[in-house]
Image (cartoon, rainbow, N blue to C red; front, side, top):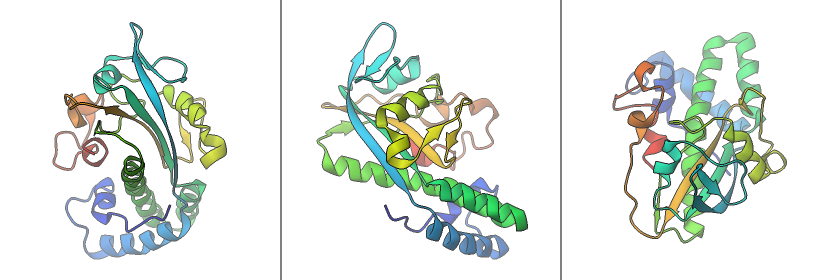
Length: 227
């Protein structure tokens, strides 16, 4: 996958800058974007699974264990299939951030924030490509482990089901941090009939009471959750 232009406004927001970046910040992001687009190697993998609702949680195909919690049950309500997705910018993103930190912390921060914006764009592109290939009359937005009350430990099970380590070099540590760090796992529900939209964005997030972006027009979930 080729990485297109990265939203510098989104990256600037991660840096704590409101509105369109200008002046020195814009110049810094312009330089850093060239490095990021030249270095990273975006990849994604996915599988389609059946969705089965049980008393203990939601079973997605052959993935073990069950997906537990009210959030995922509500998210997949009315769905008969789901997409399990994993995407990464590759280890080159982490390497680029570390190398810049040795000589220029401002550049390292800009690269880090650009990579955060870029991985969301990769997921958006993955959505478009996946659903151009398969029959999915209606679908939910992306929902990731750790969101709502869905256990973050399920990231490992998703990666195993996707064989993500072999296919795109994506693994998870004992503390559930993904390596490479600029990576995402997600579940997208598919239905043959219109889906009742549940809570999304800040309303469904367990961090909403202590998040600097909560309930703003540029909340951290604006791009991820409304697709």
